[in-house]
Length: 354
Ligand SMILES: [Zn+2]
Image (cartoon, rainbow, N blue to C red):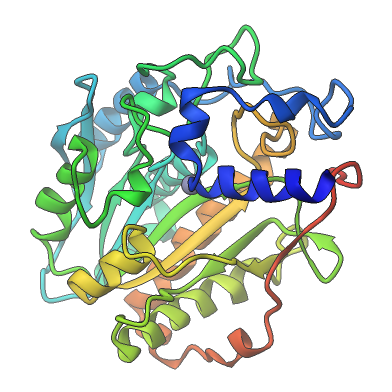
């Protein structure tokens, strides 16, 4: 029973059961006899997270303050929310990196970290990075899911009396399975107004996963992975591994960072794979620990952990932009990938906050 439940959860989280899950809440969620505080992951509250409106007003304010920054609307979500692209392009001949957040609406700390990063680029030492690299940021691609403004019920989600956030867009579609067909307006905006318009060298796609992933017996703060489709150019995969090396070296060495290798599929409907093949862009998936809201206990994580996870995003974005800007990414040693253990899942009931 426990085993099949774990498998169900893995599938549900990966989106393989997306349609089934949207059609009907998971009855198994209450069948395991776990306590009311979601495996010790803390009370699930979402009131401290920026709303879409607060994010937009932050971006407009930064745009007004920062001469190097440009803010562009690249399209609208299903529900008509403007999707934004933050641009720092000083010289198109320089290398360019794209940071993408919240394809999945319930994975918000990546967006909070991206906002902090944007603020840093407007002030002080981080501004020097801009001399050597063009930076693009698409924050909160799935704004409808992030705001819980969707055409299906979220009544079984864990954040009670608060705004609910969901993985899917308003139509119940997983945007990170739409990178081949490109049916949804959010995916179309990304491909038509960003991927096809700029010569992008690197991309980091930022996500959150469940709370129970561990490596070497210790819960991870996140896990990373390069393109794994056999159709990706080996040179692009190697550049992706170098991008991962910069992230690993800068995050895993901190007191709070502990990274594993993510177990991801090879489907090109997933941006990590599809974008590497279609555009020849080096891509990295970063899955941080714990989601902002969910209907399954074991996936959502209380805001007690917000601080270090936001910091993890800021560290990731700053270190990769800096390594591209000064060219040191070309020397990044990718051999650690050969020994980095794939994350495993700690059984239910044994998870602990760290
Ligand atoms: Zn995700």
